[in-house]
Each structure stands twice: as C-alpha cells, then as structure tokens.
Image (cartoon, one colour):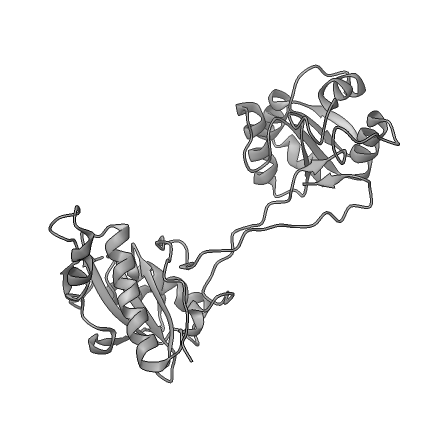
Length: 301
C-alpha cells in the first residue's frame, strides 16, 4: 500500500520546534449574546554544499541533492542529558536532522537554521523521544536546498520502511509548538441587509456590560488598520488579558457602529476601550496608564 506525504515543510527557526504546516484556526462563536464572531561544536560534521551551480536550470537540483550523505549512512550522535552540553556536541548550523528514540526508532525528520538549538528544544520538550540525532549540515543554504535535503531523507526512510516518521505525520503535535490562537473579532449583526430586532445601541450596551474588556478598534486584532489600534492591542496582549475586539470599519457586519458608538460613549475617536462596563478611553489614555502600571491594577479588579 503506497504512503502519501506532503513534502513541503516550512524552515524551522531556532526558537521553534515546528517543521510542518499548521492548520488554520476557525473557532466558533459561543457567546450567548446575539453577536457574530467572525560555540561551534567540538565534534566535526561534514559540510556539504547543496547549491546548484546555476539557479536557472532547476533540473540540476536532484543531482545536487544526491551529494548529501544518505540518512542510513549518517552518523548517529547521542544526545547528552545536560542541556549545556548540547550546544558543544551539535553544530549551530543550518541543515537537516533526524531524531531517534531510545530504541533507535526514527521519530522525526526536520530542517533548522540552528540544529543545536532545535535539538535542545526537542530534548526539553520530549526527552524520552530525543535520544540520538543524525545531522546533515548544509553550507550556504537557502529554502530550496534545505527542503530538498529534507525530502531526500524523508523519501529514503519511506522507501525503506513504508512509513512516515510519527512526528511528521499529519495532525501529530508532539514536535510542534502551537502558536497562541487568537480569538475572532465580534460581529454585532448578521449582515447590513438584515433587519435588527434590537437597537444597535442596546447591543453595544449589552456587549460592554457582559464582558470585562471590550476594544472597539479599526481593523482586526490580528491585523489592526491604524497605529493607535495596533498599540492598544499590543498593550492588552502584553497584559495577558482576555478581551473582546470589534472592528468598527466592518461595514458589512458592524454597519452604523461608528456613529452609534460615538453617541453611546460620548467619545469621538477610535479605538475605544471599555473595562468593567465603563469607557476607559483611547490609545493615549491607555498608554499613560500602561506606563504607570495603572492598567494592570484596573484589569485585576
């Protein structure tokens, strides 16, 4: 039975153990309110240049990758138990690496811009699965050559065993550090062409009174459309507070919100931040409170 795998990994930064594409986050709205939520190593490792002599002829890539030592021929290096020994035992260079457990079973194949840092991360997160490593350093790497090196090791393993390493299987999160999931921005209406049964001002009032922190901003929390909104989101994220956000520029699902909110709050500009049901202000006021440490105290009430 043939095994199919998507051989298109993202390049792994030193601070992350993720080497696979993550699925998009599509949370569902769960509010009861009728809102719509939208040191260079002591051990020497062979250095192999995987750059083709000409980048205008992609057909040379397979020839270049064939110069990389095979996975089965690469030396296996034991991972020391002490973290401070890892940096001296593995290269802080770019390349491909394979992780084996205590029984010598391949668990994960990855690429990294700093192999030693990646090994250190894995050793801390899954010590029982990170016992020995095979390394292939890539000289002057780019995304294409690193990906090709990764593919060659993956394809060799699959051809030999008929299996994908467990850590590279789709949906496996053992080796993946999930990024924090952002909440969706709220939608006050089901659409501009839908007749509301409750006045928009009442929806605003209900929203700010039923939630500890509500930020009415320009754009979304993941992509603010003005510097002031971006600053407000940064402060709230920095405080680690759970908050709701509403895009006042969304004319489809928040139609009429800007003018109605100005009347409701008696505040002419945006963003507007409500805490504990009361308007605190915009970016300038929040920035002043944040710098004085007053915002933290207010959020704890």
